Length: 428
Picture 1 (cartoon, rainbow, N blue to C red):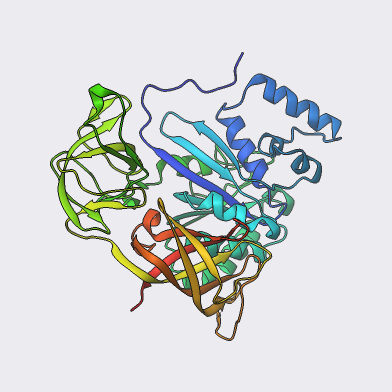
Picture 2 (cartoon, one colour):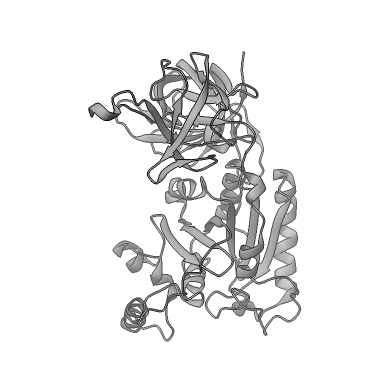
């Protein structure tokens, strides 16, 4: 028998979300509770975690074991890797990234949050706000996540106190205001006992807001996508060698912005050649339009020179084409940033060499102040830099389009990903 919610005929939409917070704030337990309460686990999975919980001497079912998949995670009781989980309700489908809380694995948190529509930040009610809580909110705001839920967890440890909940909410407000975050909901929960996770808590009648799952089902994220500016980074040029398809030339990739329809006038960058969309092809056949994040193949009315890394856009509202960019970097490795060193920028489907020409300032996570005397960025530090690329990028500011405004920085000597970058504005 399977403990799983029956698949409904049609899901209204998809919500991508991530969890973050300090170590031991209960992220994995909260996610395990959501999976359990929505009947998104198998009977044998439940039996396995019940058995493991007994073996570990616990007098309760440790739902955190549903997401702590690595052996090291189970032994240490912490999350190390990003654990992706999928679950559904009759109203929505969810893709959830359970990201690490330990400062050593902040880079994994960046990975999980980079594609999220909503971030769940957990805070231990018995400890209050920690540095990692601020760090994760700040990084999530840099990644332009627009919707936040701050779960004050482990309310059972503070006797479900309304005063403790109000005090933590008040302590957060100045930090949230400085970040300019507007869509933030505070929910008091006990992931261990299920209070306010799926159903309203009888232990906290003073809380009149929605449960976590109710909010996740109803938060509006459709308007977050840029459906105006057409952006189609070309990933692959398709030229079949079979004789019956010899004249076919298609450009495969993922739509990064706008709505594309056959007949639309487009331009190929950086070359600047103009043409029209002839068809939009998929594995299941031609379609009438495409929008983010659909993966499709475009055919064009004219044969023009387009290759991997080029971008097909609309004639209006084109992206910026340039070699000088300003960006905010989250440094992901123990080898520090070196001004003047050559790196590789991986941006959409394009990879180009680049050099960091200037470190403008380093950002203090707690105060949000700028250290303009900083000469380097170390592991998990965040700063503003100037870069010069060897060939032009086609990009938008990150706050306009996350797909074309983000990039990763790679050490060309070791091939290690050293930073996640967010493009701010053009220079020069």
